[in-house]
Length: 102
Image 1: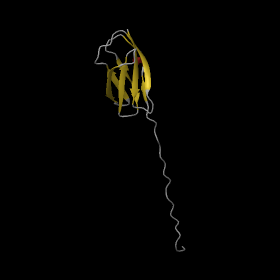
Image 2 (image 1 turned 60 degrees about the horizontal axis):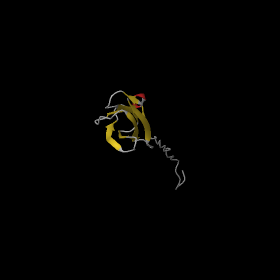
Image 3 (image 1 turned 90 degrees about the horizontal axis):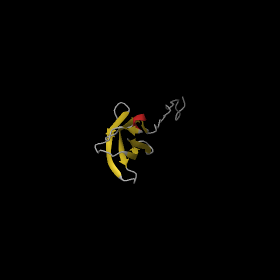
Image 4 (image 1 turned 135 degrees about the vertical axis):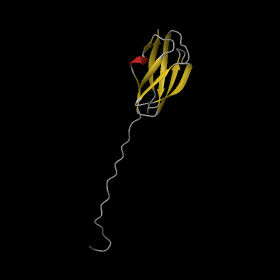
């Protein structure tokens, strides 16, 4: 071997960037309970949920832990019959869902 040269090769480094995703499931559309439960799946450790009325005022908001890829939140505030917007934070984008409380 000549001085100053090396046959050593360095291993390639690969980075995998996983997109943060949080979604709603079917139960998050309609509720017969005035304390509705919303839920879904996520690949993060926790999500944050805000329920807004038809005037877009925040009624309740809380964090929810993600266990085995799923999260749930049952409203601690009784909601009158009507339509609500549920915002879900935790993914790379904010996800919203319309909720109808019967």
